[in-house]
Length: 117
Image 1 (cartoon, rainbow, N blue to C red):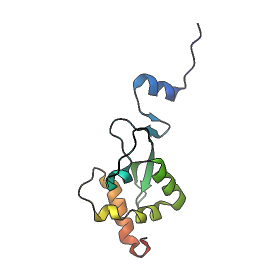
Image 2 (image 1 turned 30 degrees about the vertical axis):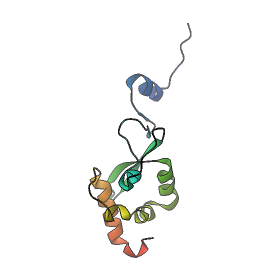
Image 3 (image 1 turned 120 degrees about the vertical axis):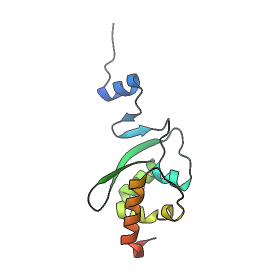
Image 4 (image 1 turned 60 degrees about the vertical axis):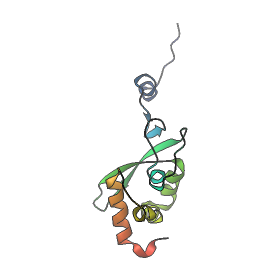
């Protein structure tokens, strides 16, 4: 009898019920794009999220999930401009479950206030 060979990552996903393959998360349980979530926008159920690292001034990483649109924006314009474009998150913030992301965002905005778009 023939049995197909599954890669180790695919095997973990299929048989262990994990949602992560090679740093990409499949939208399912409670994962949301960090930027969309803070703007109150829904993330589509079929959306693939990418786990991304933002770094503070000391080099400590903050791991966040981004939808394809925001992941591409971050890649194209860089971390500083990306954070400055989303300064409204801090202005309208009531509560968040991602304090490290907010800390990096706040420090970037305070350091470069004249570059806010």
